[in-house]
Image (cartoon, rainbow, N blue to C red; front, side, top):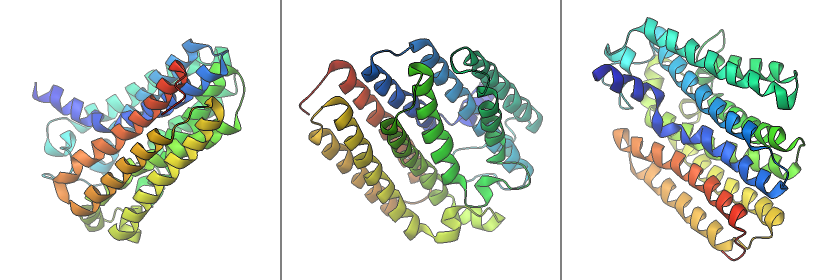
Length: 296
């Protein structure tokens, strides 16, 4: 049971809503399009979850190998560092889950064409490059940019394209919105770990710019993302969503207050809440698109 718990912790379930939210955002636009194919959409969802789990495994394995994690850390328990899991098992799991993601991705060639192989390779490299390679993104202040690209821009646009066979400016704007919300999850993570990261030489954006600057970016990201996506959605669906927008803007301000008033392990819940609100935001607009709600 201890090993099972360690593997579940390594998946970082609190953060998985980040990969799911982007796909559900694309689902909403696909539903409004009216000619969507839903099977590739569900395959995109499976691919996104597998790719994120593989990335989380890789982060644990390569941070351990680089000596960047320590026992008793403030954040969630790291099974390899604590001795609950072997480094070899984590390495094998990283590449095993990544292989499954690639297999799912190859099935999407039927709808998108062989050029998806190049995109799939880029994503696979991104999964590993976040924590490994000659220039790990997470250790050079590029983690947030990677999240915006791989959990916002790529999944939202590609899911919509594979379902509907075309590109959309509105979807592209919404993809950036989802990316900003996803970046906030990483900001909380690095905000919590800033002292540990500084000690071991892991140069995150929070280490570079400090907590005060990152807390402001967290607030701005959330507010801008909601307004951007709301404008696009309002135009796409003719839904009067002022109430929804106000509610989520209020939630973002509440999250910001929790960020600046808490420290250490108390931020673990905020990490999950930030990811959860991102998913709730996407699901709310999916609900609006499906049920044709026009006064909210």
